[in-house]
Image (cartoon, rainbow, N blue to C red):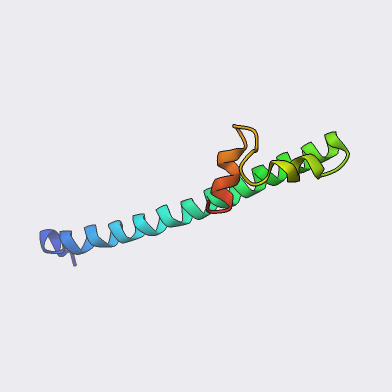
Length: 77
């Protein structure tokens, strides 16, 4: 049985709640993806340098400009 307009508000609220949940999930996935991107960069750099000393000297606030926001997002800075 179709309820029609009397249920629009409830249905809209249901979709808004689900949308908010998906947006929260996406934020967490973006954070996880940034962590993976950072770790890939980290180990690529460590292999180039032969050690992790240079990376450690850059942490936490002196990373290359393209890496710093990725690091910051992945570590909730």
